[in-house]
Amino acid sequence: MRWRGTCLRGTCVRGGFGRPFSSAPCHWNERVIDRLTATEDACNLIAQLRAQHGDVYFYLSHGCCDGTAPMCLAPGEMPLGAGDVQLGTVGGAAFWLGREQRDYLANLQLTLDVAPGHNGNFSLEDGSGQRFLLRMRPCTNQEMQALSNAPD
Image 1 (cartoon, rainbow, N blue to C red):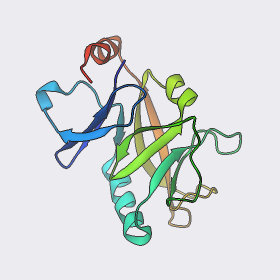
Image 2: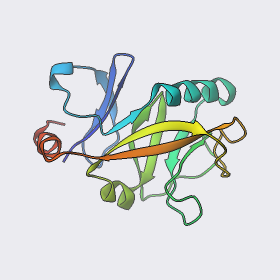
Image 3: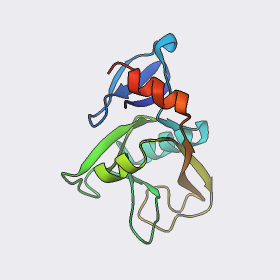
C-alpha cells in the first residue's frame, strides 16, 4: 500500500508507505488518490498561522482527552518520538502521527478541515474562533487496489 499526499499549487506531495513524503511535480494522469488532503479553509488558516508563527507542523493526537484531534504546533513545542512518522504535508506544514495510528488509519483518506469553535488544546489556532478537525473517508476497494499497485 502506498500513501499519497495532496496536490497543492502544482506540487504533488507523495511518498512510499512508512517513509517521509517528498515534493515532486504533479502528473495528474498518474495520480491515484490523495491520502492526505486539506480544504481551502484549512489551507487559509494554516497560511495565517504561518504568517504569525513562522514554520508550523501538525501532530495527530491520540490521547484520551483530545480524541483524534490534529494539533498545529510551532517547532519545538512538542518533541517527536522515535515512533512518530510524517504522513505528508498540507499547506506547507508537515503532518505527523504515531506509526501505529498511521497503520490503523491506512484504509482511510484523511482531510484536514476547519470548523467554528475552540479546540481547548495546545493547538496554535486556539482562540481564533476556528479549530482544525480531521475528516475521514474509507477508501474504496478500487482505490486500495490502485494504491497497492502505484509506484513509489
